[in-house]
Length: 301
Ligand SMILES: Cc1ncc(C[n+]2csc(CCOP(=O)(O)OP(=O)(O)O)c2C)c(N)n1
Ligand code: SF4
Ligand SMILES: [Mg+2]
Image (cartoon, rainbow, N blue to C red):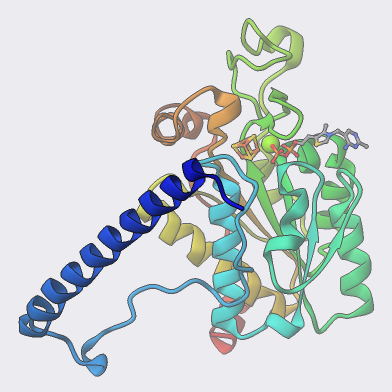
């Protein structure tokens, strides 16, 4: 048996619901009278101006707001979509913030131990030379613990694409100094700023590897503005297409925002790239195919 007090509460609840139902009906009436008078577009009048690549898995990513990783994942997947190579592409994920890249890219992927992505990709490409194989690596992964694998892989001219996210810190492990940290940059292991006498100059990986005979295409891009994003996508598209030529390694460095470890807002981080990062890491192509190779490129367009 419900007490009187309970019955009173029930009545109040019922009358509140009726009020809200009435409101909904009234709102509905207004909507029905207003909307038909509005001009409407026919389906064929709409133009699709943007859609998410179908190879990018529809889940929330774990990246911090304003992080460049999510954007570059999307660009790589757009390239895979547009080239129609989802079934032929194999990616190698790093250790670092992008360690879960395989959860976001709907392609075959392998995880590599920290710094060993290039070695893993070498094995995959040699076993399956008709596949498009790429590594996705941070600066700690590629330029610190994995520098030996990186140099030897490119020196051998392995026919893979390397996507190198340079955010100048060890992002995942809370912002320690990386080989690419700027001179004077404050990190958790250089709290007074990177001192050249103690740690040397930042390593300009793209310039360094461009001297290796196996490097076929080397470019440095960013994703901190709409224009930069468009250029970065074009570079990634070229890098994947060049694999068809079997002429060597294509290398796309991306200067990426890490707002969390730079202790900046996403907007400040984008500005920091334009104001500071590109002084040490100028954007643009560093090594381009030439001569006979240029003619060959026309064939894979
Ligand atoms: C063999 C080994 N050494 C060290 C680590 C610790 N560790 C994990 S991620 C990382 C650095 C990641 O930095 P980076 O490659 O620049 O990627 P980001 O997170 O900045 O994208 C380190 C040192 C590890 N996981 N394995
Ligand atoms: S720590 Fe930096 S690199 Fe890692 S997810 Fe956050 S913003 Fe991105
Ligand atoms: Mg990093």
